[in-house]
Structure formats: C-alpha cells, structure tokens
Image (cartoon, rainbow, N blue to C red; front, top):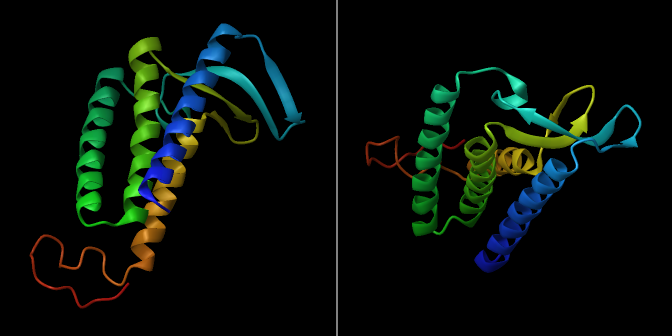
Length: 161
C-alpha cells in the first residue's frame, strides 16, 4: 500500500472515531441493537484501561504518554528503514492511542460505543490499536529477521523466525 493511501485510511478512521464519540456524547441515551444480544451501540465512559480494568488515572496517563513516545520513535525508525507494514501498524496504534488520550484529557474517561454484550464495550480507536498490533505481529512473523541485528548489539542475526 502506498504511504499516501495508508495515511488517508488512518486519517479517515481517526476522524470517524472522533465524530462518533462526539455524536454519542450529544445523544447519550441512544442504544441500538443491530444483532440482538451480540452487537449494538451505546455510550459508555470507560475510566479504566483495556476492557474497563481500573487503574489510578495518574499512573494510567504516565503509561499512555510513555507508550506513545516509544511508538512514535519506533514508527520513525520504520519510516527510515522503509518498512511499510510496520509503519502502517504503528501508525494505526498511535492514531488510536491519541484518540483515546484526547478523550481522557477532555472528558476524564475514554468514550466507548461499540457494544458486544458477552465481551465488552469499545470504540473504533480500540479497533485501530488492536489491528495495528496484529499488523505488527504479522510484519515480524513475515520477516526473516526482526531487525537484521541481534537485539541492540549491531551484530548480524542469522536466526530466522
């Protein structure tokens, strides 16, 4: 996929997620069941981490900012090495994380709206993060070596995955 197309896709997903969050905040009582008992939409303010697991907000904020810094650093490295799959996956993760971080800073919680009753309530940003993580895993598994060198030593890595 060409870089311009991948950034367009990520930008559209980010904007759609932001617009859906704003819409659900303006229409908090709305609940639609698309597939009864399996999938619907409704507003949930998630103050915890993934899947609503509780965590102190200060610690959570520090973890999110630290993770974002590391992800952006990895993304820049992937861009320099022209690893498109890796860069796209990292871009999805960063965009999703930024959208959820905006929620935390602006509303004190992440705005979730996709409801899978037997699982959890989540949002498009969470899908972007999960999809990006899956792409990263796929990129690593498809490569013959993870980075071309043994972890941080600068020596060639002859081990295949």
